[in-house]
Image 1: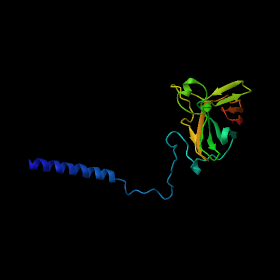
Image 2 (image 1 turned 60 degrees about the vertical axis):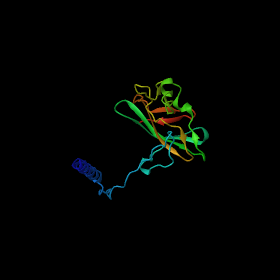
Image 3 (image 1 turned 135 degrees about the vertical axis):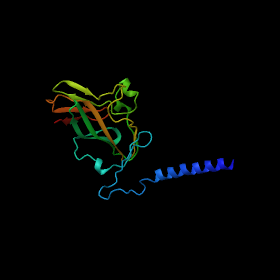
Image 4 (image 1 turned 90 degrees about the vertical axis):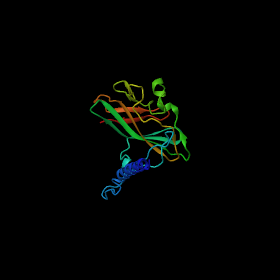
Length: 191
């Protein structure tokens, strides 16, 4: 019987040694000096945005700044058409107040399918006055809006990077009105 326990002990030792060897692989690797380590800031539990922002992620251009309730601003930084027939609008929500704010539920719109997927920017629309059309945020096959979701609370001074995807207006349309419930509208130039 002692031989059986000795074999089990040796087998356990061998397995543990292999595990330590695998875990130790790459431990001596260091980040390259010419590339700074990248970090990302994710929303904390509950979908609230963090106050920190990375300089690399900061947009360099501002297309429009929309004022909302209680000191919330939506800064739109890009409106890009793609070859697939979509228009993606990117920007950030900013809390300019000195207290944490719950984002209003109206920003998700009032469509039942969108509402059941939580707080989002699903209520955003584009109005093409020349073409007499209104464009809504696209939805996937499950009714989820193709926009930033999980937007609940913005801490004082905090920001949250956001996006919204729409069907692209015709290339002849060079200007649209962007609208989001509880925010003032803004005119966007499209190229």
